[in-house]
Image (cartoon, rainbow, N blue to C red; front, side):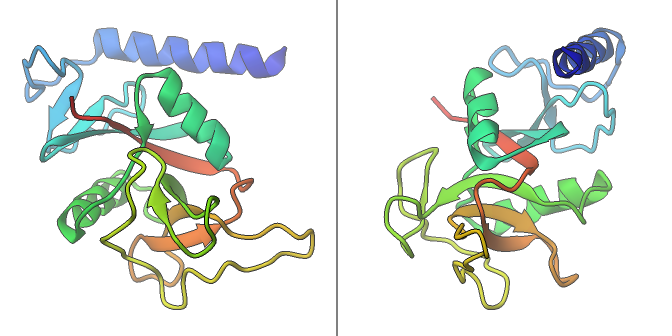
Length: 183
């Protein structure tokens, strides 16, 4: 019961923040009324969609979730966990996360090799991952004492070199990045 109350309070705060926040740089764009055009609109209550290039993102930072629940949350809200197709896209997303003060956190994105060990693909698109930004020594599919292996992709600043990619157990609970899929 308390879990549902907490979620209700968070969603209510998001709605109130969205109704009361004023941002003169907000895009007046019919296909993305909540987008912010590559500016750092740092209102933690509204968390608008962030427009970086042609993609639009939502940082899921109000609760931590395993990879499956993060995927479910994004899908429920008409999005997918993010896929990253270039160094430029990775850098822009990392800069936004860092500027928001969360560069030390972990973030799920949609990459996985659950279907075929060692062959990562974007669950959001079904396409193989062609651009990569792995931490040194990754992916390593580390096997934990409980038998769980690392099959889901996260952004993580493991060694102070920026948000690089890491394969992690899908059950790990962390923040996540949703992406609005282009039409």
